[in-house]
Image 1 (tube, helix red, strand yellow):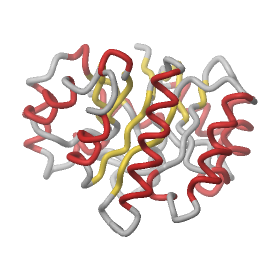
Image 2 (cartoon, helix red, strand yellow):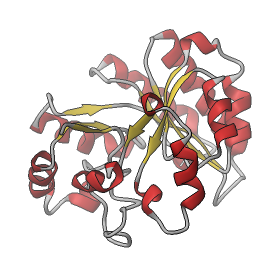
Image 3 (cartoon, helix red, strand yellow):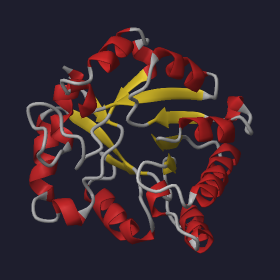
Length: 231
């Protein structure tokens, strides 16, 4: 069996600095043939590119500015993020989106940064990886401003309903990312929803080091654990 982890941050040395080689060995042993590495902000770029150099046929970088890292001065950082596409081959724009779970004070900045990055992806025919937490309506409104025929990618960490899935499909050519949450005891509704969605619209992810599946919940997640999501 071959598996792609479509969303993992195992390049982050803060969480994987001491055993990255072991993590790579375990994921390859489990048949994970490719891993997509979304960026977070300017500070994570060196670790991201250093990790890709270990095996560029196995690890594939994306470039983006995560919504939780957007502050008042986001424009300067965002410009630097977009300039990175001239310096290196990136496979998409991500991780981008809107997150209003902890803080809603920078909603305007998050929307502007999200739309700027979606616009870049659309013009350059690149996929996007969307982070959506308590911001589904805001993301809907943003994406409706774009040509749906030019927007494609993944709604990362999907936990929504069948109706929300249908709405996502109306916004562009999107897959939904399913991770360890699907294994949690309180995710019965999500498991029912997933059964109603075509397999062709589902991709697997870990979001490592977060959201470790059962039986690893509460521990640091890693790409090899994706087999529990697949099961």
